[in-house]
Length: 60
Image 1: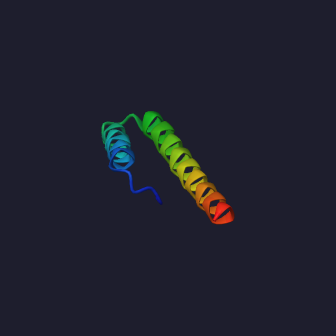
Image 2: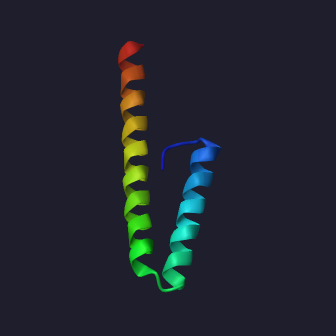
């Protein structure tokens, strides 16, 4: 992940901890849903960060 924001990192730690909990307690589908959401959010944040960097370089 390309974000240096502590709150974003904390959010993903909590999300992946919940995913591990659901997986280990036998709720595989809920764990899979959380994994898919986490991967999508991580990718979207990386894309937004990359686009912001490119816009800052063009403006300079």
